Length: 320
Image: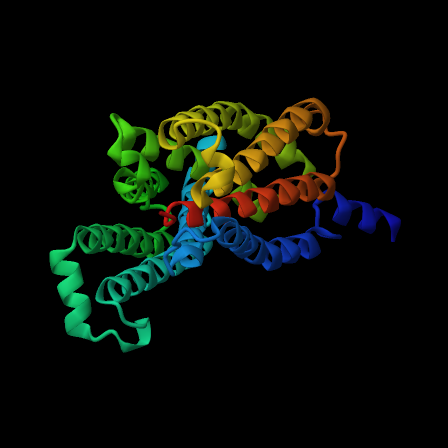
């Protein structure tokens, strides 16, 4: 009986399912909590109605990116096509919801009163609507190809999903706040993609890795990716803050600045946590001296902190 328990613990089945349920149950509420916190910090500054939906769409896109990138960590780690397709479909639905909310805001009416002709007018005449169409095409293509990959895994290439997802995720940042500055579009796209890859790949690992041996191989490889990704997020974020705020005072006097400050604090916490993990988690897991359940708990904790940051970032993107 004890041998059977040890084998189950080694494979991460004793508590892994419970931890995974907690991940799925908490990542969305914490992302929404980040959006709600940002809304409070905005104060009198206008925040568009689609803030929470934007955070959810960004998070879903990041998860799809992470799932598509998993084989890049190890050829023995096949794509999770079913999960990827479901998340991509959710991403598509959230992007469509954002389009409806944006169109309603432009028309000055509640979303439930928006008619099909009014939505069509927004899609055909407004730049935001045209970008939204491109986003829907990208999300829809990823969803369709994910379904194809699920039915014919031997014929599908996850790198194709990786490219389409990256391009789609970059579409909205290139027209955001940073696009008004020199090279701002490039910086915005790089910032968004680095953050999505950092968050999405770790969440994908938490959703798929189940054994101590897998963590021993994959965690050090993820750590090698996470360092440049975190550095990229930090550098591009600092440039954005310095260019947009023009000094330190706006960080406490404007809603945008307060949200940006909160996001910066969480980023600093994540950088400190990453430094600690590289000293106390990665080498121990690599030496097979940590159980799969312990590694999973650490991954879930970091993912949940990142979810709050994504909620803040989603609201920041639609704050004047």
